[in-house]
Picture 1 (cartoon, one colour):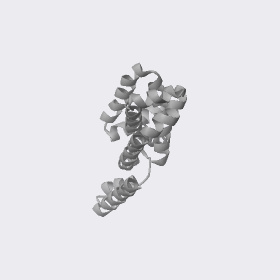
Picture 2 (cartoon, rainbow, N blue to C red):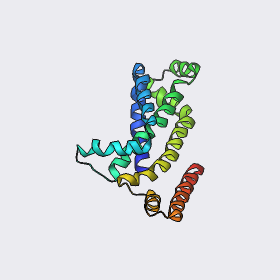
Picture 3 (cartoon, rainbow, N blue to C red):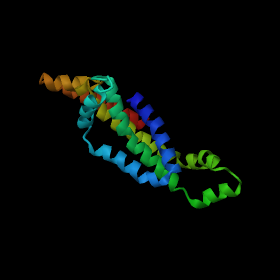
Picture 4 (cartoon, rainbow, N blue to C red):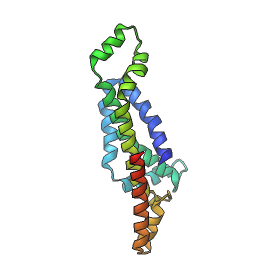
Length: 177
C-alpha cells in the first residue's frame, strides 16, 4: 500500500500538472482514470497478470502494486485538479498583479490553497488501497490478504475473521492518522 500510494502521488501529481497545462485533455484523462474505478478490483488484479507477463513480470507483488497504483490515481488526480482549477480568480489576479510568474503562482498560491483537497484525495486513496490490497493475495501479492484467502480455502472462519479485523483496524488507524 505504501509503495503503490507513493507511486500514485508521484504519477498523479505529474498527470495533474500536465492536464493543468493542457486543459483540453483534462476531461479525457479524468474520464480514463474514472473508467479504472468501474473495473472490479479483483478483475484489475487478474488483468495485470497477462498484461505484465508480456514484459516478464508474472505473479507477485509487482502486478498488485501496479493495480493499486492505478486505483489510487483516481482520487489523487481528481481532487488535485478540481481544487486547483476552482481557486477564486481574484486570488490568481492578485498574484499576477504582484508580478508572480505562472510557475510561482502554482507553487506559492494555488498549491497551498489546494492542500486540504489534495490531502483528502491521498487519504481516500490510502483507505481504498488497504481494502483492495487484501485481494492482492489472489495474484500472489501477499500481505494481510493471505489470512483471508487461506481461511476461505480451508473453510476456517476464524482465520477469515482475523484477516478481516486486521485489515479493518489498519484502515481505521490510517483514517485517524
